[in-house]
Length: 225
Image 1: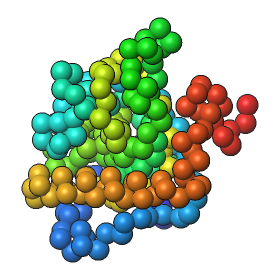
Image 2: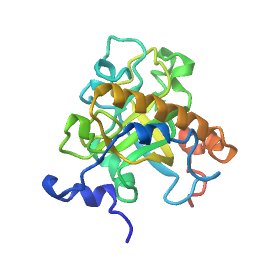
Image 3: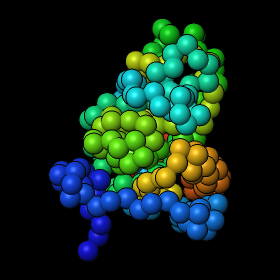
C-alpha cells in the first residue's frame, strides 16, 4: 500500500498522524548530494501559482532564509502562497522536501521597478508538511508556514514582492519530513537541501523547465490545450 498523500494525512486528527522521523547524525552523514531519476517522473512536474502572502517570518529570524515578512530587509527569498495553491501538490505528493523552479511575476505596469534578475526563473526548494520542529498544526509548505504554500527561492531579492503572483514548477523529491532536536540541525539540513536541489537541477531534463512556457503565461510543456 502506498503512503498517504499529504492531503490525506492533513484530514486526520493531529494525535493520530504519523510522527515524523527524528533526524540523526547517521542520516545526515549518509545523505546523497543528488537524488532521483535523470528525468522527472510522475507525479512531477507539478505546477503551482498564487499571490504572495505573509507567513510566520521565521525564515529570516531563525533559519537564515529571509522571508517576505522581512519587508525592510534586503535579500528576502521565501514566499508564502495561499491555501488553495497547495491542493494540486498535497493531493498527489507525500510530506517532505522538494525542488524545482519558481518566478515572481510582476504586472506590466510594475515590471520596471524590479531589477531584471529578480524576475528571472530561479531554482527553489520547498517542503510539504507540518514543520514538526515548530509544532505547526496545519499542513505547510517549506520550512516556516501554516497551510499556505511557501517556497524558498535561491536568490537575494532586491525588491519586496508581497502581493505579486508567484509561479512554480515542482520537479522532484529530496527527502522525507523530519523532526529536529535543535535549530542548528534544522539549518544544516536546509543548507544541504539547497545544495541537493541545485545539483539535481543541473541535469538536462530538469534544467529545460527553466524555459517552460508556464513561466511566460503559456500552456506548460506536456499539457494539452
